[in-house]
Length: 148
Length: 270
Image (cartoon, rainbow over all chains, first blue to last red; front, side, top):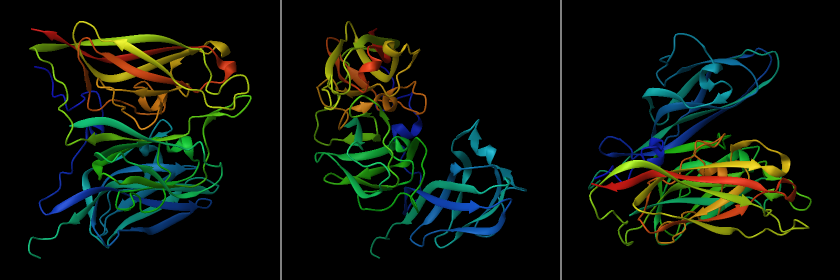
């Protein structure tokens, strides 16, 4: 007989429905942390934070540049201060031509509840640069233990 | 049983430049909805969006300028009797201007599946088969405007069409649409902002809560990563692919030669 009728082989995997591959005792839900910043002429900001909410851990899986009015360079670190690159990345890495696409972060980076996404960012233009970044991933909620 | 479905929010009644909280798309009460794709923010807003789960949990830590398409991973379950809530800032309704009221194509599309626990099982092919690629195409001349002539104030009704599925069962995998706006000597190109479509399954069930803009359905859309239906739909031999076409065109753009291709696979007996 034919292919599995529940799956459309032409569709992106997400359109076919992805359940969370989360560990036992947890449940994942789609979530996005948003980072908004306006940089002035050639401004460099160090040790910026996107705080992780205290209700759940966050697994970061992709970055989307939702908006930027100019070129910038950026470097990320996790809650322990571990840098995810040896230097600054140009924002063009997050684009195909001029179109933003999700920049994969694999394997996913786990941020504990109450932790932070660390950011160093430098404006490479001589004018104001309005930037919004989307940290795509999942919130990982801990399920109540039976009898707890 | 999962039925491919798109819940649509039409922003026609909103005001450009305004911000709205707690907009809501109510779900049909007979089934839960598994949200897998959010599309269309640029068509309704030059600003930001916040989307909520059925329990009002926010999907973004702050209102976000999401791109044309956003996949939802893992899929997000909305229980029956709930709805998809969202906020918008700086509304800007995309439209085709007319001599009267514009034809708006300012829509948000929430694509996923309705999970129907009590529905009869999806039809399946009764004979042994193998699949071969096949496309049922149909050519339509859209010679009516999105607003009723001559004043172009009142929204025009859609028109119903069908494609007969002959000989063998057919599995619909995706839809492509191509247009040629003869009135403005437009090129032959992927249909974009010209029509809305309402598609039905073999039993005549609507697959969308309201007619959906072409760019949300067209697998060849320019700005969107569109693909519908997911999961694929089976149309048995002797049935028909039923759909309504709603024009979004101004009188000045008419007529429009529209080709709709229903692409998939034929189930050949073996």
